[in-house]
Image (cartoon, rainbow, N blue to C red; front, side):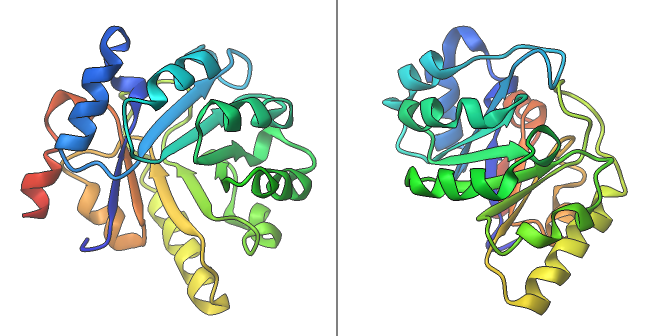
Length: 213
């Protein structure tokens, strides 16, 4: 737990007062702002896009990990980079030319993450693990906040950690979905470097400063 980072998800914040949400993230121990972008196609809901990210970028010095839950992410990575993303994380399931897009994100001067939904095995991304800066394990089916953590996600986290250790790779392992005050320690112990929490963080149940004291 000592080096585990918290990345609160703005998806669970009050959209009418994102400035206060960003302040809460900074005041309560968040290290990264997790920004979920939904297009209504890859996932059912639509969240927010480039103009919103650009408008809130000036309100925080924390890095923004923009999680693109969108089809054809290659069409929008440039605009999200321009809007203020520090990390751009896209889905394995949404992109055909993954290798090319990872290199393009790096050419934009951004860190690149790859995300997998619960039904996608770690083996699917084995070849590109040396290329990415982050692997985002979805521990719920993406698209809605407030879901329960899927237990077999722990096996995927441990598998990624084993591969990273055996091959001396450098990617971070991030976990998104159902992270709360009851399971965050177990998820971190499995190998997660970054914990994404939305509902539990913004409801005040997950008190990161207290837990880390």
